[in-house]
Length: 75
Image 1 (tube, one colour):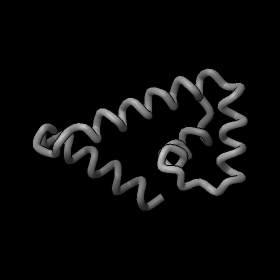
Image 2 (cartoon, helix red, strand yellow):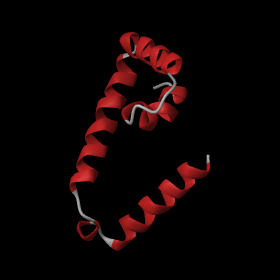
Image 3 (cartoon, rainbow, N blue to C red):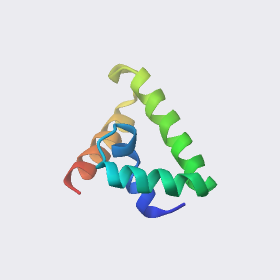
Image 4 (cartoon, one colour):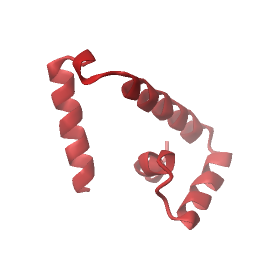
């Protein structure tokens, strides 16, 4: 899968990309089945996680997710 696409997925799904970047990403997705598969998996994972409450997550997983999100917000 293409690393540049992976780095844009969260913003793409939240519709936070500039229109030119979104067009470029969608053009790439139209010809890259690996990235489409990754996008579908990412979308499913986000949907599943949003359906859970914080109490549904074990403390260790909650801490790991918080650390990941903090890391992503500083990039």
